[in-house]
Image (cartoon, rainbow, N blue to C red):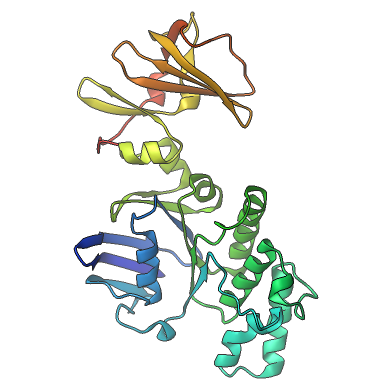
Amino acid sequence: MEYHLRLAGLHKRFGNTEVLRGVSLQVAKGEFITLLGASGCGKTTTIRLIAGLDLPDNGSIFLNGEDITDLPPEKRNVNTVFQNYALFPHMNVADNISYGLRIRKVPKAQRDARVEELLSLVQLEGSGHKKVSALSGGQKQRVAIARAVAASPEVLLLDEPLGALDLKLRREMQLELKRLQKTLGITFIYITHDQEEAINMSDRIAVMHDGLFEQIGTPDEIYYKPRTSYVANFVGSANVIRRNGKTYAVRAENVIFGDLCPGERAQVIEKSFAGGQLRILFKLPDGQMVTASRFGLNSAAEPGDEMQVGWKAEDAVEVLDNGV
């Protein structure tokens, strides 16, 4: 199979720090892939290599089967949307969007038509004359995306583009970005540390940790079938249970409790509510902690109480234990 974008064994070191330790990824045309991980895991370095802003120490990057590893940024049909938007404050919205087309000497009539098409696509019709300073955060983000796709890049790289928005607007923009991506048919490589964002938007997720991909899969696979204890903990904060030399991940929503349920006697340590979700922290007889969660369900359990705690065998996924 010929992949649209392929990363093959990328290594990158800055000084004495090895930031990437041999990452490989195959991306289909029109796919929305998210690089998910904590700060410092190598996400931004990976997309900087794809963009040509940095060069790998080892490994190769292929686009449509062509080796672009050593090509300068302007020779790659790849564009980037940054968290800070990087819009030109002295230009109006239309001029910002058409900037790349002007650099490519696209005729004015063609540029103007493309700007109107994109303003409609990002739902900013009639805003071409506005100053960038007059726009809201969400509108600036839409202009940044419109500018990035104006010249129809093969791949769009998005470096935590929603990080500066408030929670409500960020969720709205998640849906908007996904709609735009499907409409445009452009391959999106998106990076974030927000697991909910990754799960909501992605066709596949590549979970990064310490310069490597811990697991690559669909949101369902990453959530329900984590490969390592790190993935289980990072995506959805699963309970990691160690028993008889094996390690299992059990999602908090799959933990059952009550005097009549099967399991073992455990002590209630803490009870809290967050976003309509009840969370109860239990201490098992061997000292391990287990969290159970329920939406919209109160419980008579109080700190200090004891009750049965357990889970169904099929809800315990065996994982590789990397100590997280």
